Length: 154
View 1 (cartoon, rainbow, N blue to C red):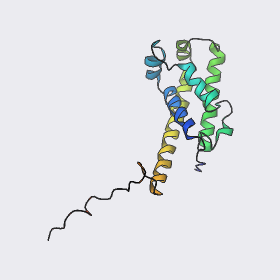
View 2: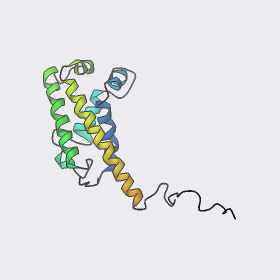
View 3: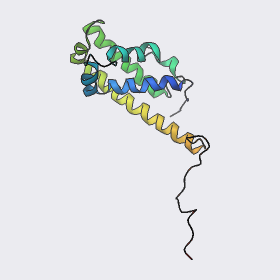
View 4: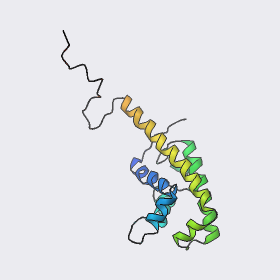
């Protein structure tokens, strides 16, 4: 796996939760169908297709908000699965119509795989940063076993 890094990490902070939301049918029903909540399918679609990526053509986002070719491929599959549902129910259909569509399970399945890859890749990147000496908060040193500052038993 080649991690191309990401030039727009603030974009990824929107992409990952949007994909995770598409991977969670329970979340979708509890949050998206609640009129009192801000997040809904429309918001999620704007994040992934308009604002922080383009799930219909994710290749240009490699190195920007997507880390690997696998992420690009899975995002394209997600875009295609969503597009198939949208074509079958109509772009103006209510969220519950999308969620009840026979093709929605394919959207959830590819989103679940993509979510797993995104989070795993972020974990590896974070681990690599840590191993390279980047610690949070800045100026802190990594902890060791905790025994080096204890008095020795003589």
